[in-house]
Amino acid sequence: MTEGSRPSSSIRPGFARADWNERYAQKELVWTAEPNRLFASEVGGLKPGRALDLACGEGRNAVWLAARGWQVTGVDFSDVAIAKAGELAASRGVHVEWVVADVLEHDPGRRAFDLVAVLYLQLPRDELARALRRAAEAVAPGGTLFVLGHDTTNLEHGHGGPKDASVLFTPEDVVPELGDLVVERAEKVRRTVALEDGEATAIDALVKAHRER
Image (cartoon, rainbow, N blue to C red; front, top):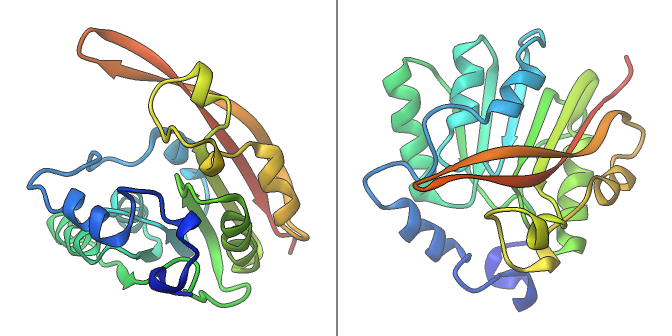
């Protein structure tokens, strides 16, 4: 399914491919060049293998993995983001396979990756479920799936993230889509967000699972 054929409900105003391209076109990185700290802490001890970063954006997590010996594929529907990701990888002296594709259309293959990362992919519930099922299917025997996103409770009790409840989710929303993966963690996590005038707290949904060998 391409963005053009999606129902209009799945494309929030300001979040179409063209909008993301415009956002990513600014000179500086929209996010930082460093990996998500929670992601890094949770997967840093894994033995490097093949990794898939879905909705990779400017590639900070994919590049971090590649620098640690992973063979990485990064997928995002923004060609501008992928171009910046390529520049980041080059600046760090690492290779990543970059793919410009809608995660709802891209087929990564079954049981092909030792690590599959889905970070802050905020889609309407039915589309997120499809993306998660495909992500779970891509996990190889012994491999890990890591999902992190803005939790539903963040809308009222946390800082930042989408203000549209239909694209927020909880750990309990993720787990049923993981098939035969074994869930290791499924919980809400809080993180500190630095502001110009202090700090705030954001609430994320975290799910970590693996496929038995």
